[in-house]
Length: 215
Image (cartoon, rainbow, N blue to C red; front, top):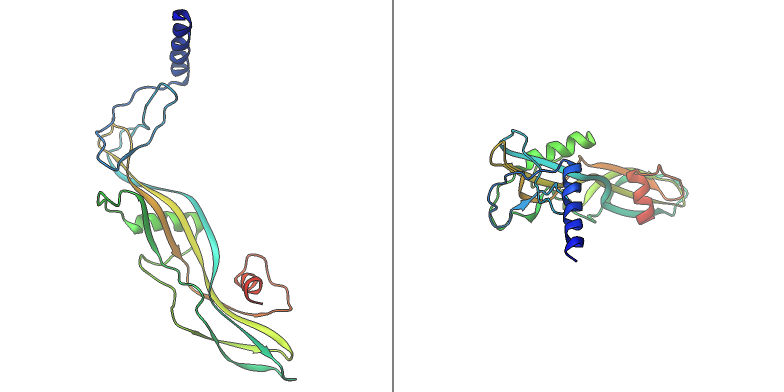
C-alpha cells in the first residue's frame, strides 16, 4: 500500500512538472471574490497577471439576436390597395445594462461602457447606452396592404448579450482575481418592417421573424 501511494504521488508530481505548472502567489480573496484557476489536479495555481497591475474586463459568449418589440396584424378586405399609417403595438421592452452573478453584494463598481465597447468591437454594431430602453408606446408605421392580403407592421432591434468579468491584479506577480461578473445586454437602433404574410422573407431578418411570430 505504501508503495502504491508513493507511485501515485510521483505520478502527480511528474504531471505537474510536465505541464510546466507552478505555484503563483495570489492576493488574499475578499468575500465574493473568485480566483481564476489555471492549474491541474494537485496544482491550485492561478492565471498569472504577467507583470500587469490593475483592473481589466473580459467578455465572452457574445451573441446577437433579432427581437420584435412592436407588431400588429391587419387585413385588407377591399379590392384596392390600402395605403395608410398603421399602429404597431408594443410586444417587448429591451433594456441596456448589466446584471451581476458575482460582486453585487460587495459593491464592486463596474463600467458599462467598458463592457459595451467589447460587445461593439465583437459585433461591429453601435449599441445603446446603459439604461436605454426601447419604446413603450404604440408606434406608427406607414405601409400599403394589397387587396385580400394580411400584413404585419413591426419594429424591433438587434439585442447583443455577453458574459462579462471584471478582473483584478493586485500586482504584476499576483494571480488574477475576479472582482465581479455577470451578463451585459444592449441593443441597436430600431428598424421597422411591413410584412405581407403570403410572401417569403429573408432568413434572420426582422421581417422574417415578424412573419414567423405574427402572421
